[in-house]
Amino acid sequence: MSLAHPERLDGCDPDLVRLVNAVAMTRDVVVIQGARSLEEEQRAIASGHSALRNPMDSKHVTDPIMRPLALAVDVAPLPLDWTDLAAFQALGLAVKALAADLGIGLVWGGDWVHLRDFDHFELVHPHPETAA
Image (cartoon, rainbow, N blue to C red; front, top):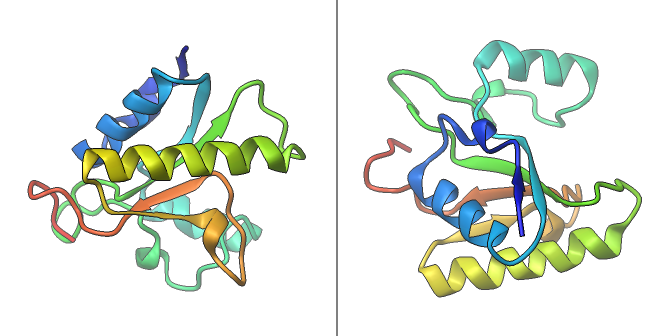
């Protein structure tokens, strides 16, 4: 199995990195987005790629003082087909199960009611090294 674009995990909480690497041992996945700057999130909001209003609400955003590491990552199944919801749902279930096995509190965007974000995974509780 493989992990495409592992460099996109740079700046992510160690528990997210551990989880994504463990997932890649069981299936082929690609990291779409890990940490991003405040400016990147502002652009995502302006272009409609983020439904948030306050960019600091994004768990992807890092800040040297408030949140030095990202608490969210976007991961997709390979081969990447954004219309293959069954593949995203299978990945989501697998990631949630593995997170539970590893003792990592996780929220999956596919479980959200008003906005389904099938490639989004975020920590419930940050790693002790990460400020919330």
